[in-house]
Amino acid sequence: MDAKKVAVIGGGTMGNGIAHVFAMSGIPVNLIETKQEFADRALSTIEKNLDRMVKKEKIDEAKRSETLDSISIFLDVKEGVKDVDLVVEAVPENFEIKKSVWSQVDEAAPDHAILGSNTSSISITKLAALTDRPEKFIGMHFFNPVPVMKLVEIVRGLETNDETYDVVEETAKKLNKAPVPVNDAPGFVSNRVLMPMINEAIFCVGEGVATPENVDEVMKLGMAHPMGPLRLADFIGLDVCLDILNVLYDGFKDPKYRPAPLLVKMVDAGKLGNKTGEGFYKYD
Ligand code: 3HC
Image (cartoon, rainbow, N blue to C red):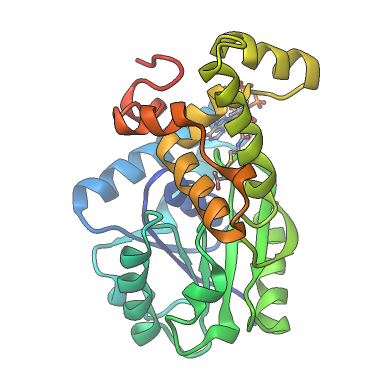
C-alpha cells in the first residue's frame, strides 16, 4: 500500500510543518483544524516557510503554488479522514483530546488506512488501544522545525504489524526524511536522551552554577549544538518539556527524571518560551 493521500489533524507548530512536508512531496493533504482562524494561521505559517524557501532558492514559485494547492482545509475530523490512506495526528499532548480525535478517526477512516500519531510522550500502545486496529497504529514523531529536521522517529506499539511499519518507513523516505525505528517506551529515544540534558541545564541555572546564556554557550561552543539547551527548551515550549519529563518520571519511577523546580515554577508563571514571549529568554 502507498500513502497517496493523507490527513494531518492539528495545524499547530508540528501539524503545519507536517502538512508542509507532505504537500511539498506531492502527497495531497487534508489539514484538519477545529476553527477556521486556526486553519488560516496554519496556512499562513506554511506560506511564510515556503516563501523563505523560495528566497533561499531551495524551491521555485511553481513548487510553492503547487504545495499550497495540495492542502485542503477541513473543520470536521470525520469528513477530513474519510478518503485518506494515512492519518497523522498532531493535536495537543492531552490524552482526553487525543482519545476523542482517535475515536472519530477510527469510525470514519477507510479500513485500510494507517493511523499515525506525532505524540512526543504518550504511549503508542495506549493510543493504539483506543482504536479497533492497533496493528495499523504507529508513532510518526517529527522534529521542529519539521521542514528542516531530517529525523522521523518511527515508534512501533506492542501490536504494530510489519506492513504498517514498512508503509510508514517508505512514506518518510518520500518526504526526504530519515526514518529511525524504535520501540514504544517512555520518551522513545529522542526525548529520553534530550529531556534529561535540558533538565540538567535548568538545574544549573536554578542552582546558580551559570546564567542561561553561559550554559547555552558551553553547549554550543563546546559540543557543537546548533542551539543551547535553554534556547531549545524555549523553542520546544517549557510546558511541553515539563510534560515529557513527567512522562519519563512516571514511566520509569526513577528520580533521575524529576523535573527541575525552576522548570515547574516557570511553567506555573506562564513563562513557556517563544510562544508566550518569555522563557529563559525574551522574544518579540
Ligand atoms: N521552514 C523552512 N526552513 C526553515 C525553517 C522553517 N520553519 N526554519 C529554519 N529554516 C531553514 C532556514 O531557511 C535555513 O536554511 P539554509 O541553511 O539553507 O540557510 C536553515 O533552516 C537554518 O535556519 P536559520 O539560518 O534561520 O537559523 P539557524 O541556523 O539558527 O537554524 C534551526 C535554526 C534549524 C532551528 C537550528 O537552530 C537548529 O537545528 N536547532 C535545533 C532544533 C532542534 O533540536 N529541534 C528538535 C526539537 S525536539 C522536537 O521537536 C521533538 C519534540 O518531541 C519535543
